[in-house]
Length: 524
Image (cartoon, rainbow, N blue to C red; front, side):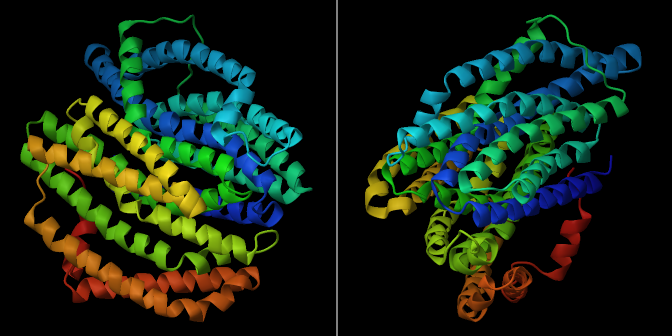
């Protein structure tokens, strides 16, 4: 397998999905704006979205893929062909997973009223009819949980067969379906929100069909069989839940923030937080997915071979790369939130006041952006050593701190309070992860990392100053026709990137030779 090409295809498809997500959000802002209709849909979409991030995209893959590969390796050693044994394990997993998912979906449908109340805080200003509408949207989106979990199982099989691009392309179908519904089925805000909820579940069907077709093309056909809770499936289940809890602190914090915003803040606050989080998730998704893809298997392999020094080197370089990409993204989102949000969302029902409010939430979220991504660098140091309990413990502490800070901030800071609480809680989580790895001797920052971290921060601040001075020049162009708006945003961001690159060379954070070596090397 060519690892560079595999990562390139995953990164390219992830970027395509994120761009389509921004297009979707831009259309959503145009047709629905920041209103009760948008708040109701975003609450309804929050749970399946969180479930996808916690389970389908993280914990299940982390538990299933190594076991599937191990079964294939055992089969290859015993039979000369490992795929049949891997498929048998996948069928065993499916036999238990499918009934659990069906029961869970039925329970969620029956409990839609209390679940919606819990996620929204009852929508303080909503009438009974409006709250009933939000419950209906939740019922429409709940089947997506079942569908996306099955997609995760099939995607794990294809990833194990080195067909990474197929699974990476699946989220594109979600965004494409939602965009099609916005373009062709938009009516009044409430009708458009309902059509978006329907489109979510339809996209789950399309993604599952896409993965089934791809698996059959790869010679993988899973049979439905009676549930068998054998030792392999028990081990799989025991690995899934700690990983989900450890990886889910940010998502759980967002749910808490959303519920408090819906119950204690004025109409539109949930939407401000949502749009801000969508932009905050762009660098998080692109950088975090790449690091998560490379670091865990690399560090696990090095530790398995007894190469402690190599694992330490890999983690240092991972942190270095995280800082290289994350620091400028953090500064740019804080400094240029208004022109970026105006270019993407300020048209139709989305007003200048909505832009200003969303930019404030984005700045608060972005304070924690380095922490969100450094979690992806630090947690492999635990998981590679079969320690899933420590990250769970720290995630629980983070959730508790987030709740306390939310309650402290939400009244005086209004819609800025929940994002700031989430950011600070994530910083605490990263500090605990880092400190414990240091105490155990599993991670020590080397001289190269220390040298570059200070210079990268300096380069990012220089870039931020340049973008701040350019804000007034570009802002008038971010509210014109679509081509003008997007063009102005890309020129502003591109100029900031150029300034950052030049500053990195001037401060000697990186040299051209360093960059050439970075792109030539592949993980050991």
